[in-house]
Image (cartoon, rainbow, N blue to C red):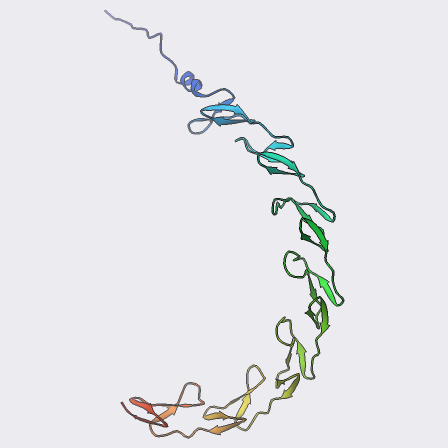
Length: 244
């Protein structure tokens, strides 16, 4: 005899899943679980409405919000940004203000102070630090003014803010506020920088001359070629070389 048993109390997998999804939520299409509808956020396995403060808007589907342009978040509220004179609204929220000074002005004590540019200077974009201006080429800053750099004969201007503001041409060396010619002695040549001389190999620099190096016994010229060193296995002893 064939006996058929009917189970009337079975629950389909679909209905079981749906019963786990709270109100104002939807089952995720991929993976397990659920997510709240836009305008709701998950709290204790439920989807509760997102309470937006005045002048705010939803930023995403997870309940996040942002203040509208012209407002800034402050303790969960959107406070109106007060823009001072000579300033404009900025998306870059700096120091919790939401505004920046116009060109030619700098942030000072909650307001925008005009930058005074002296004669022979130009305004820079960096107004947060320093003076907000730089001197034109040929001038250098001295307090709040730009003074002319006096370049001597055979010299030229540099971009360095340190030193006198000039260097000598190749073949000349600075002597006070002048550029004097470099005297190259016999058996010497002008250095790479051009402001001094070097001696040829086998000669040593002595004052303003290049003197021939007289090699003591058991010595050889060193790597520079302008001095000597002991040959192995000798070691230096005063002005000569002795065995170890």
